[in-house]
Image 1 (tube, protein in one colour):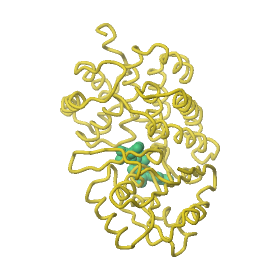
Image 2 (image 1 turned 180 degrees about the vertical axis):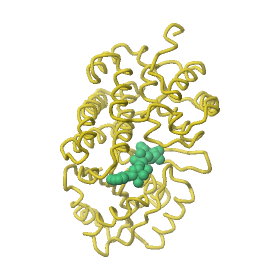
Image 3 (image 1 turned 90 degrees about the vertical axis):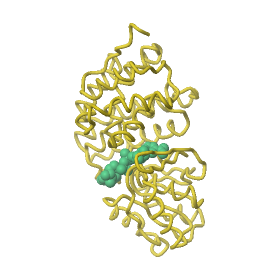
Amino acid sequence: MRVRFGAGSVRLLDDEVQRLGLGSVLALSTPGQAQLARDVLAPLGERCAGVHAHARMHVPVEVAETARAEAARLGVDALVAVGGGSAIGLAKAVALTSGLPVLAVPTTYAGSEMTSVWGLTEGTVKRTGRDPAVLPVSVLYDPELTLALPVEVSVTSALNAMAHAVEALYAPDRNPIITLMAQEAIRSLVSALPDVVADPSGIEARATVLYGAWLAGACLGGTTMSLHHKLCHALGGVSALPHAPTHAVVLPHVMAFNLPALPALSRRLENLLGGGDPATDLWELSGLLGAPASLRELGMPHADLEPVVHEVLATPYANPREVTADGVRALLERAWSGAPPADLLRENG
Ligand code: NAD
């Protein structure tokens, strides 16, 4: 994978397309980013065979089928995803069956461009897998493209990135380089996010958050995620909750659950997050940044809690602390109501 990072780097797209010897490409985006995709692809002239602006969150199979048919009809050599995880996810779904290379121009902090993970949703069931064929061959990170990202989306998306970095720090397959990257991701996100909220058009803070998101995405791609990602996956499936806001609400609660089992890591996170209890510090920072605090306000009915507990226990992910039904239930109750994070199982181990 080749990465170009920096303000204006999107103007290197034509260079990348030529370097890769591509004759024509299909651009993919969500409907709201259609004009942005047209602008980004404009320098390619006729080598951009079309802009397919039908990406939707979690890649419904019928959306993937339509995009695959369009890529085949146009006979393109590659896909250019312009947008967040939804646009990149759609490109990956097309790449999975067609083998077409993906170039990614990320405009959120979700990090999908750094991973070989694909996802496809059929009804309410989302399947994911890893395949090197879906890992973008070229990524252009241009903070100028994130200037228009609404503040609320910026905050939740950056907390989504933070979750990749936090879970990489206790991943079963972490290594010292991943650990450095994860710490640097957290440091960058925490230092620059308040500035993005204060002035969303400030390019320096935008660049620092995008840099943190790049690092966090690389952590996601390089390790196995744990309870937090399992919970968010289950919440997305059972209650169709929005991806990034769900991550933002759940992360402090998972930290409160896991960190008592990881005292050395907890101390390192204290230094990165403000000096107090890391879960509480992150929860307070989220509140100051205006992130949602509860699953209830994201629209989750209380009755969905048990199905989520069941799903998390039925097909568990790795986790540094034993995951019990009581533990997940207690954690979810607090996340649902918006209570501050607390390790309710501390006494019970
Ligand atoms: P998204 O791509 O749906 O974007 C969120 C919202 O922001 C959308 O409404 C989009 O139109 C808007 N938006 C994007 N860029 C914008 C811009 N520059 N200006 C204004 N608005 C903009 O959501 P996301 O959070 O980026 O990605 C979530 C999806 O990605 C989920 O389906 C998730 O499962 C997937 N994902 C996959 C991986 C992976 O490794 N496979 C990693 C992270 C996320």
